[in-house]
Image 1 (tube, rainbow, N blue to C red):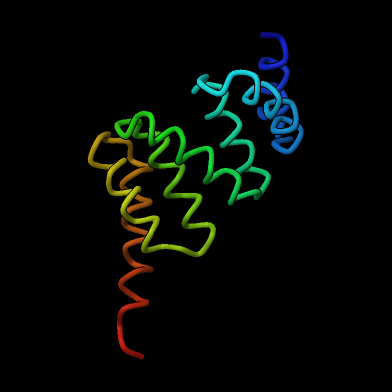
Image 2: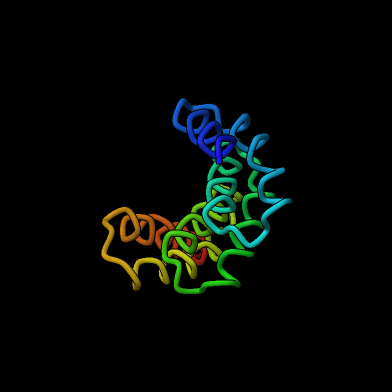
Length: 121
């Protein structure tokens, strides 16, 4: 899968939009390939194409709700879309499934935003 490796190289080089451009036809041809879809979602996230990233992440989570990384990235995507309450549920799931420090830090950060929004001004 030479095109996939090319996309990985662009992603690693900080060119997520180019990586996404390469990955889109691969996902279209192989819609069940979760590895390619996840890299596409990450590339779209990196290129700030957040609604499109969300779509691919939701497909992944529908297939495998126990994918803690997809849950975390979806939470981060929702957070970047200024949807902290929606993000928090996915971030909490990821943190419950895996002890990654980043996951727990994201929960604390987003929970604080949600709490701040709920407080009367």
